Amino acid sequence: MKPRAIRGMNDVLPDVSGTWRYLEEVVCDVVESYGYREIRIPIIEYTELFRRSIGDTTDIVEKEMYTFSDRNDESLTLRPEGTAGMVRAGITNGLLHNQRQKLWTSGPMFRYEKPQKGRYRQFHQFDIEAMGYHGPDVDAEIIILCARLWRRLGLSKLTLEINSLGSNEARLIYRQVLVDYFLTVKNQLDDDSMRRLDQNPLRILDSKNPDLREIIAAAPVMIDYLDEDSAQHFAGLKALLDAAGVVYSVNPRLVRGLDYYNRTVFEWVTDALGSQGAVCSGGRYDGLVEKLGGRPTPAVGWAMGIERLVALFEACGGVAPKHSPHVYIVAAGEEALTRAFQLSEELKDGIAAVRIEVNLGGGSFKSQLKRADKSGAQYALILGEDELAENVIGLKPLRSGEDQCSYPLARIVAELGDVLGKID
Ligand code: HAM
Image (cartoon, rainbow, N blue to C red; front, top):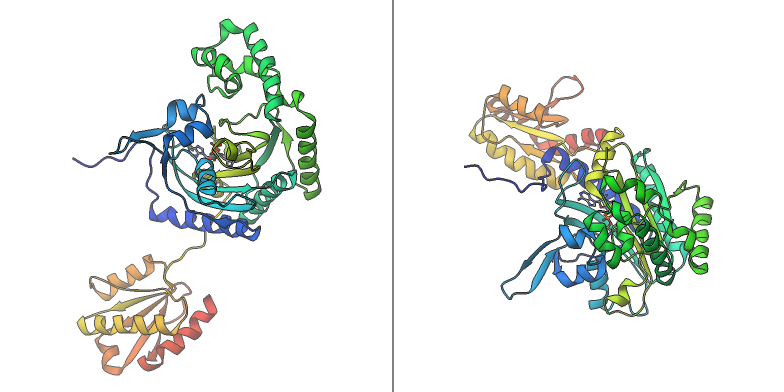
């Protein structure tokens, strides 16, 4: 019986892995140009970390975590997102006390969701977090750098939605307003929402149940209950985005599915990918560091879904640079193969960053040349008995239709270096 892959967990095959790597490199390049530095954190954390940060009554914690006991009976969870682990790492490594940090990380995340296009059980995020900054300037920066990234990748189909969730105190007032509203339509709520009415009524706004859409659409919105400081913060963010020419719309219904947010929340969305349109989402979480046991530290960040970024890049006609070999060495006969291996190493020593594949597994000239063509190489180097006898080697351009030439073996490193200088 063939082994099965786990539902919602995909292999990234060689034909697309080049696009993944290209996009990850460009994102990394852009965020590092704004001063963000990489941190690598474990894929597994104590379950408690996610419960306390993401929130007990969120869909993620209630329904979607991969949680298990280790051999020591400790409850561990495969990370459903990166922020909690980044904050934990900041606290446990003493990175946050009297310091400011701009960090990025990337890697797989795990959520037991219903798999569909753009939504997977193992998916990948690129994540940035700025900790220790409280003004709206950093909120603006992390959004503006996305706009730069979209331009650099030629992505035109993204729009920005922003909202403010205010302070914790203002949200308590709003919470009561919301409870009062939902009580008036109580008989139309589903079981989940009834339960959340007591525990966390804001989560009802995040419900995926289509039957609740109208009730939710008519609910009062947080932005009408903002405290003065949060209103100013939001105005500051909008002014900076305006000055930078970043277009946005305020979406008062944007609440996000994680409990740690306050003030700014935002999503870059597209309608080019079907129903899973959020490509990059984030916001401010000023209370989280303290809640997890660190000193009070304001923080803000976002995470981008790499699967969705790849899909959008392709939908916008983007093509990642290919890394085909420059040269494919065709070698007929045992002696020629031995010489081809030597030559390949000499060429790699002599020509910086050259990519060379030697034909493996023998074959006729014709079949080797077919493989050379399929490899995407620009040139084939041809070594057979005749060439060896004369101490020469054939150089055949595979893409231009130019004729094959012959060079003395002793000069081929210099000749090829010249020729490749032209194509690189
Ligand atoms: P999130 O909205 O849960 O936020 O996820 C961020 C992004 O990850 C989404 O916009 C989407 O592109 C991608 N994503 C989420 N779930 C899936 C899935 N099942 N399959 C494919 N892609 C998915 C967070 O995770 C926060 N930690 C973001 C953040 C960072 N907030 C502050 N700092």
